[in-house]
Length: 91
Image (cartoon, one colour):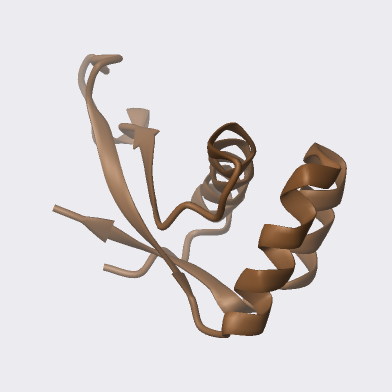
């Protein structure tokens, strides 16, 4: 299921940036803590898996080029190209 909620997307873009910086490459799968809105106690070891979909190879190359430049640069590139980056929740 493709994620469309603006708050969830903001968290996913931030997590995507952080994972790319740690792994030093564009990462196609990320994990995010389970949503507290699901009700009941939230277990911190439960995570949802998301596939990162980038619809243009040039955008992926641009993101890759911005990774060595640091968090601000990569964050700006992700912001610029967010219409080309989507997240699909995996079961």
